[in-house]
Image (cartoon, rainbow, N blue to C red):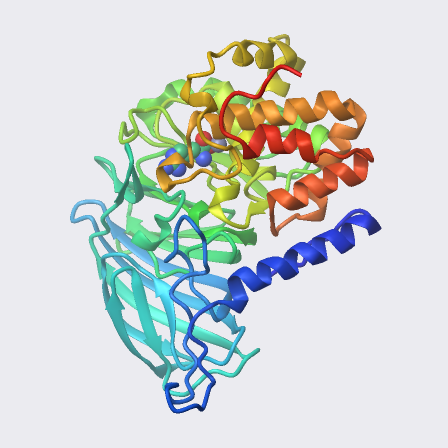
Length: 479
Ligand code: ARG
Ligand code: ZN
């Protein structure tokens, strides 16, 4: 799904347009081997979707040549055998003529593929599921791909964590950031291609299957229960989630009309007091950054120490906490709903737009709830010695995939926002954040767009500030 950004200011319109043209060249333009030549050395006229969208850190993530509108995932999971049976119904639009295109899928067995209901040829090549429709697709054509598949999903290894579909003692959960979605469904696995999702998940009676969005219904037939979930607002694939377990479920609608669905493993009952605060945290954030971007909210708390119990993921509308849940962590994952989920990055190098922002929201929360001021937090961190890894890599350009979640991305990223705030003043700072959220709602954005927006609204040249804080290595000198 491609959403045009909706800039708040005329001045920003030009900037946003310029940036998206530039991105178009870097990604779309170079995408794939659209060989249309007729010279002696060129292959016959063929148009093949590229195996990646051109992300510098993950060259094979996502694919070129089409834009997914919607994923319909019909899944059946058996916690005993750990087998997943799936059917993915994908609606997409061709952005170039296509004789062949890829989806990403790692592991599992593909049983059959159709394109527009006609049987299509396919083969596997690493993480690429290469599909050849029985007739070429025209540029601009809407098409449907249906893939039936099955197997025991295996998570990927990504530094200390496992990515993708991960089993627990009585079920499974998903933790995909950045590229684990392909372990459980065929997908254009890059945040650039956001889409809406429907899930129908069948599990043994007595288990609950949770996903993103609003619960559409649940029905038990012959000892198996099917849960239907609907995620209407565009979602990046790494934020798609399913959790299966013997959860205790709490459902309610807030006075503001938000549908809350919490699923908590009974062994993690310590999470409930923090969860009670979710509506007030979301209200607080809505006052600062604009309306909560989705129709549903909640949390999934699983019993697993797959991640040393330390981390959580901001899966859309309903973060997954693979450990007990602290209010501070809930503030962080809630902040991502605005920063990262509604407004998504365009390449993974821009991860500070997610993590630096969510970290700064934690500081703001503390400051406004009787804790340390953001200035104090900044000062405390600034006292970190110059040889600390905090200062190592440029925040806006983590050099390797494993640097995506380095402390600098979170903390120095947040310090950058604090610098911005003290430079432009509180009024302008919060106007910048609100404008950022409203103009890119449901879409993607870049660091360059953020800087231009901040400059437009503050009437200041912020180039040097951002350069020092996000583009350079080493501890920034005291001004
Ligand atoms: N985005 C998560 C957070 O809110 C961090 C995930 C860290 N690890 C990972 N491999 N994705 O902090
Ligand atoms: Zn985060």
